[in-house]
Length: 282
Image 1 (spheres, one colour):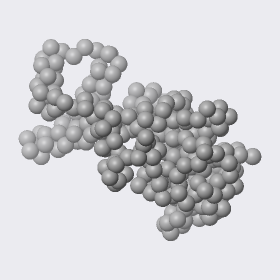
Image 2 (cartoon, helix red, strand yellow):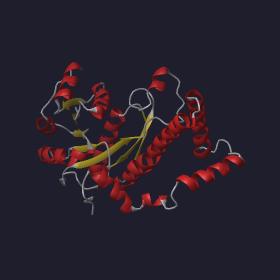
Image 3 (tube, one colour):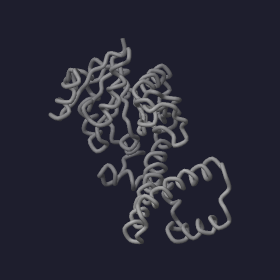
Image 4 (cartoon, helix red, strand yellow):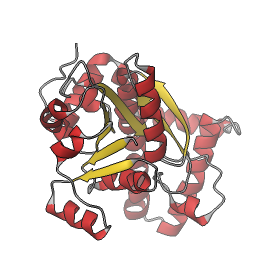
């Protein structure tokens, strides 16, 4: 039987992946250092294992811990692993920055959930409620595995599909490509735009004085139209809308904004996220 250990099983993401793995055919071990996390695991009837002991017995070790401590955690655990063990992290930043403790006889994978698509056709209350994914709404996953060990990649794929279930598909890319997706595409751009929309709503209501129900209704409906028109080509924007969009780009967006896709800028934002001076990649 394949043994999977979740390190940080009492944390936010650790809980999510543990819930799905607990219902699988894998033998699952749960590791957690914080007292609060241990109490949570105990309340769920999950026995807390010593990290090093569990890691030694595992085929896959999932490091569900914050990016800023991945280097320290991997330095402590990777030397304990048996040859061929897969170390699976949930974000690409630490792997891209060269912070993970390396061993030539260990396999490394990164897998990040895409979350349920804004265009997902939901049919049940559970799917509507699951905006993050991993419970009821199907989602896709992007993962990186740069070894040529196909057997290990297949095992990583199988575990990924369970821990992020229900999964539509797993897309395999390089570590760098995954880092471009997360943070550059989805955090630097998409999440920032979401925060900007919320700020614009606040200004519309609290500075201009538009009643909040009216402003919120107008914004949420038009966000859907904006996304379907731009990303799916559902309907063309009106000529007047295109003029307003040009004004918005001229007023809000910097002319050189696409520099965020340069390697140097990617290194800069990841170093800032990990609170390090610079990435260590070759």
